[in-house]
Length: 97
Image (tube, rainbow, N blue to C red; front, side, top):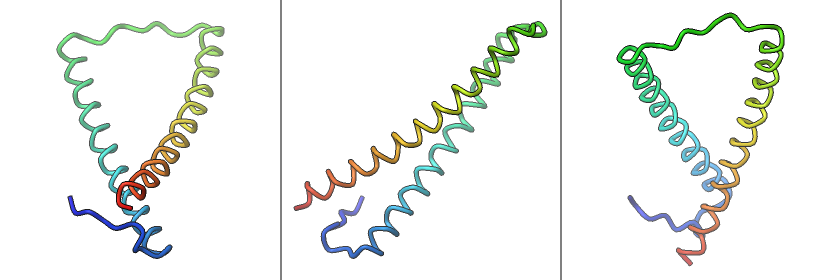
């Protein structure tokens, strides 16, 4: 991987680099998700899927609450990823100084 002198880049170039990094990460995450989905499907076919009964009202309510919790967790995860990128960027800038 080519080294980039972050200090020599202007703001527009840094923003472009950030956008390229985000795009590449998104591609890699999507690829990995596809791989994992295929693996889960293979395992489900190999070992069979567990049967699931219809949820009761209390189970449905708990599942809706769980969906909200998952959405909050996903948003927090995305914020953590952005913070990680920011910190990695700062660390890379310090290393190259």
